[in-house]
Image 1 (cartoon, rainbow, N blue to C red):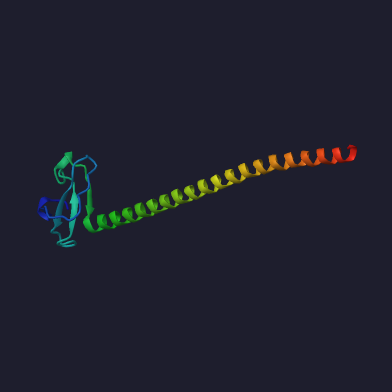
Image 2: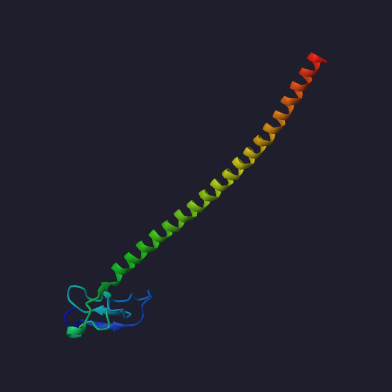
Length: 129
């Protein structure tokens, strides 16, 4: 795409155009070269403007693949995050169950200690009584 005759500007893109390296929204253009006739691409608005251009260029089909790949990975990350939250909830539930069992064991321990002393007192009273 060395000259402006080898591409044309188009505004009917289903994708949101990416930002170029200089921070501007790219324009959708169509190639008119022999090697890529009719192939669309995103380019910096300063594309083909001499020294001031940033050089950003990407074919739309490549951009679509990158966008799909990114969305797929993003979905996987969200699914993993959901799994982490679910496991965290399950761990919290188990911790609560363990705390409840610990509380019940302490209560039973006090009851058993109380019963032990009652039995000891009864035996001592029966022995000496």
